[in-house]
Length: 429
Image (tube, rainbow, N blue to C red; front, side, top):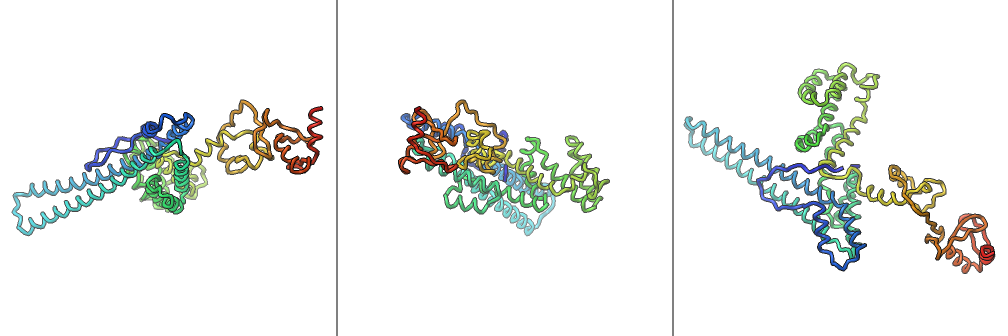
């Protein structure tokens, strides 16, 4: 699931008590840095500090999920409490009506039953909130456990986290779950969050908008704050499907109820989609024909992924792509796209070239020569030697080759052979 971050929204207070968790990633980085010994080499310290700067999403996602859980529990409790209070008020207003003892018992039993249901919902909500708080704490503990003296284990865990993130975005859910379970990093990855997205994506792939509209309703205040028009696009698509089915009266009724309220902000799109009532699904007019194409559902899926990522503070691109592009930006040169690019260069592979296509070329102040044979740098200590056929290799590589072959050296690319001693004499003369 190929998924820029947006500011946090204000979450309403909850009626249940929950521990305070999930400070910002900068605070976590500061806490981790404070635990570092003053004798730690500055290079390792800088490496750890730079790593912590990339962990914003790692803390932001569970915290946003935690806030969403609190808001959902608050709405449920508020709704149930209001229903109980309204029931009591109605009974009080009917105090002039004489109620039999059986009716009174029935009313009280109904009230008790409703209160018991509320209690169960409160307990269930509290357990869910505690689970989310535990996940936030586990991630803070993971960041604080980073030791600059031994980063290999921590980096290995981070690599697995990045791989799980990539698999979830690419819809390899089962593989992601197995990797997380085998590595015992369930609290460090966002499987449950992506499963929430999976339900909506699967429905959109099946040309159903109901789960997506329910998701919009659950996150209405956040989407409105970010000026999202995703719900409007869903409503338009549902209208288009009614027109496609030639159910014009239902389409008109639907437009009056669900599309008309968007007229003040999206009049042009609204006028365009309503015109399909006249043009219908078999039109050859390009302006309206595109609205009936199946790719509109793919566009809705992409739009949902973007809104979902913004809501949780995720990057639109998978973390794996971001880390790879950071490395490829240092390796990308014009030579990488030539036919004789060495196989050892990652950019000799088409998949890496595609990933690096939007990146600028690496800025090289000084050229560096690397020996094709030993892969070592050629400099004043290990100078380059040019063979008579024009190919260049390091002195060290040619010396070792000459020792193994009784003074003969062979160009590994063309098979050209010559005597090493004569080559050196030619250089001296």
